[in-house]
Length: 385
Length: 223
Image 1 (cartoon, rainbow over the protein chains, first blue to last red):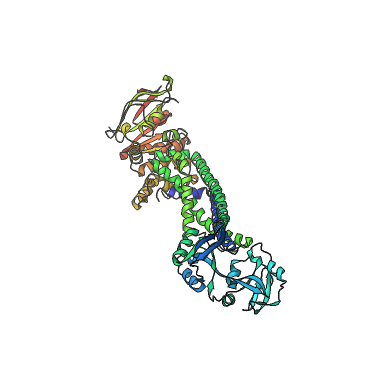
Image 2: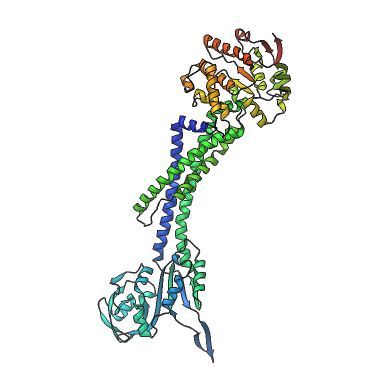
């Protein structure tokens, strides 16, 4: 038995009131935990989904451009020192960077001016599995190419050349099959023909090369500038640029979810704090006689302050433990209902953090009433005895 | 002298009629039983609160064991109340959620250091001394009014206080129970414990070795 026996026994004596306060605080802790876990899981899931809507980093070979004009006639821009990227080398270099885990897709592109049945057409060499991962929004009439001699036609190109899924045609004199036609995307993809990177490389006489690479990076864990910096360092002779607008749009969506969760959590926390504070204040008012008695028996102001703060701390600690476990269960249920992917898992560190934070918040909320209790003069309290 | 109060003044407002004590002198010796009597509003409870360090006087000096306690800081005064003085009230004012034994040990529960085995043994002995042997595990709600007052007295005995201050200790008890409490209080000075009791009942005041009567905030008589 010591000073802490008093709040412990009081909590036990007023178990209904303590249980109600514990319930309110545990509910708040549950809501905050669930919101935090759900927003984190949804943010990660959302980012993965957003990554399927295109690249946010572009890698191109470094070149020097010269504008040439003579006699009043412009001869256009001339590129010097342009060397194509070696797709496998770029892959290796990207694998070596520290933030590799933040990069979800690296999609090489080889641009070639080809001819389909003798008609000029822009041909883009791609690696299919990566391209599909990067452009989850593509819809195809027919199917994606699976064989080396299968190609995918953009909608406008297919209209212009009268191509349909299953048609056989020639590309630079080689027989190819149109496995599918891309549904209109409103982008440059509609006007070109997509083929395997190796096939286009052979046709263009640049096997294993790429004109540029598109990279989809997950940015929630680090700023995009860090990834760009590491890529530029690993890929000398290239220009690595972030497509800021795309990045900002994605980050805005993810941050919005996080901010919403933070805002709602803050309101819940404030309400919980007010509940604890008011409950403790009411307890102080009810227990003025008891405080007077304790003070008359020689309990110091700090002692009385400790009695009330410890009571709140005990309730906060219990609520934090219960809140985390309930919040974990609730977040799993919410995520399965939302069907947005993402999972939550038990973490002892998070449980401790939740319990300690709740205890601290509860103790801080009880400071004003505890100070009031500590300031009770025994002589004034004893007037009512 | 154990307690020596000189020219004690106390007022609860700026007006002359707000004055409750006007220069009261009182001395209490070791093992002495002093009763303070007077009509309602005479200032006897205020005097008791000042003597017991619960209230500070506005004027005068108050010495306990030769030390002027009016000059003590808040912490020193807390310490003095904890170790030197014991207090019982008209209502027993035990903490309802602690057992009788724990209520006796309450002054020892002021800090984070656990109550020792010796302190627990002493508490049991004190309960036995006031006739509550075997009832230490009971909550105040399970004890009679007289028994609760005995627990309050045992609380004072347990902390080995030098003075027991009692404010109308029989005020809420029936005659027979009150008599029992007075017998107990009367026996305490034999053990060296001084008792200062406020009462308005002349029969009980007579049991004290000395009776001090207050009227209008002044000493009206000593017998």
